[in-house]
Length: 416
Image 1 (cartoon, one colour):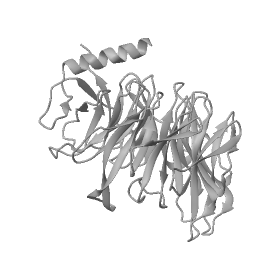
Image 2 (image 1 turned 120 degrees about the vertical axis):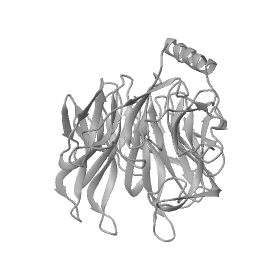
Image 3 (image 1 turned 90 degrees about the vertical axis):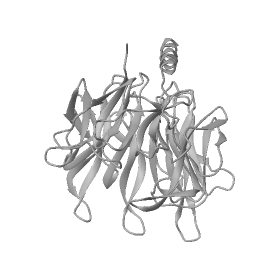
Image 4 (image 1 turned 120 degrees about the horizontal axis):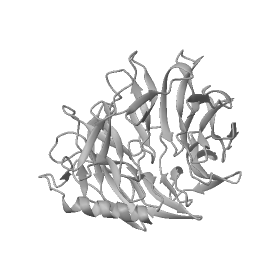
């Protein structure tokens, strides 16, 4: 309760000194400090699509991926002003994706093994007490970790020895606990993958089911794994497939149901019609209308994500995409966070502060931003000479990590 009061006091203080910009957003330069996190010896931490920070815990420890002096991308831990190389599992590269309050870090790292086409094979790893540990696979070639809870339980996906019709390894969702990798199984189809785990050890993700499309392509449903059993979360009326993306400690799940199949692309680009929903105690609450996709949710069941308007198109390196609008949803109400040229959410904390990136109407490039609890958009400052920026994660102390240009940065509120 005291933490909530302090956060609310800070928000009110910030609001009282805000200065409006011509674009309608609030320029943050007078109120935010930006810290360059450096690199692992290379020229950059990453770029707009990959690399850079991925997560920050409540003790200001930051993890992600940075370029080394040899031009390789390695997982890093940044703490007390220093960036540490977490190494690999014998191969050339690695990436850290999550960290808990105890400083345990998970991700994937290349091994010495080579794949079918000669590329390195990556395994899920756990880094703790200065050492990187290979979490292994289910007798298949590769694996990847995506999340860790405060008990040190890790989830992700790992290849089995089974192969699909095209000869590729079939993966299953895993839970790694007390030194052992547990196969969470499937909902009747061949494959599955975990996407998140909460403090109680409940795991969510997706799994293929027995039913297929007319062309033979497998369908998938969102799942909840708890007490040793997989539960099919189903789909919304008219839906064909679904995916769970995040779960909080209250067991609330952010997911989406979609109506045409896609193959691993960005949600909203290849899914004709999808709808976000919140699953809670066996019931689904629909979030918004069609073309609404969740990113994550906080401890209070506040969901954030994007709405893709099929009438608005933009060109990117991959061709034509859809312009998203950021949204937040809580207690049955949806609010659009930014209008104009498009916006993406990335993270939300318990106080309801949301970070991401936006195309300001001024057309000055992508800008890292924070939406305060009242919906006010604040543009975060950039490093000198940087054009694009993005914020990717925020903790309960309003510390934000992201990229400014091709450099990893930390934004903190200026005090006094």
